[in-house]
Length: 320
Ligand SMILES: [Zn+2]
Ligand SMILES: [Zn+2]
Image (cartoon, rainbow, N blue to C red):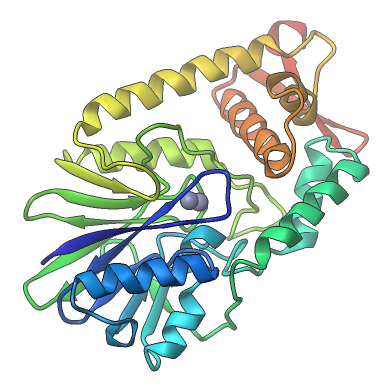
């Protein structure tokens, strides 16, 4: 089974996105790139080099439903005459450009984000969603943990690896322990555990960082020899990267705990201190990152948490 990485340009700060063509029956594309002219042209060229065309695609598999990964899914499906589209069922919050704004607003208010800031984040999101088409319910099939995507000469095992988003999935070729991991594993940066509603109970927040740590450990249990991420170069030494991630997460947790004064702070207060002057999409990602680390510290009983005037306030345990 041949895995062909194709790099596509995106209009986002993160830079190009990697999609993966499995050039074997049924012809499968893992992730699609954003809905831009530049991305579709680069994809056509990449497929041409593999002696294939977009119309040959039979199956479109999404690691997660961020616009840079899923944006072209619908156009490609239509051009390929109803290729099957598969995504994990927990990818509801972001499902293909259909972020539930009311749920997000509730989460942001609880994190202490002021209304003016929420409006700015919303405008930013509206700018981003133009890069993906939305899908109706029933237009895609479900990726199930531990099921297999079968090919003429092998299979990819589906692993549900939540963290970056609730429905993020990775794909393992066990024969040589190669993994396609989307944004779960990125060579140069620690993936941001994006603030999301819990797909099972949307009134709650998804424990993104705690889930992410479990996903990383699960990937590690396969002792990957090669990991293809959603951005940047492939990872040959997963063990080194795993240890680096764990250290970075621990360091960030210490930093976050040190930012909490005796009389308490919200996630928004912490984000402002961690990332002063963050603009554009980074305002939201900064709050995401702060919430993720504060939640983990609270679940590990390193901080206390109480609700005051509709906002969650974290305090050092010694002061509570
Ligand atoms: Zn992503
Ligand atoms: Zn990405």
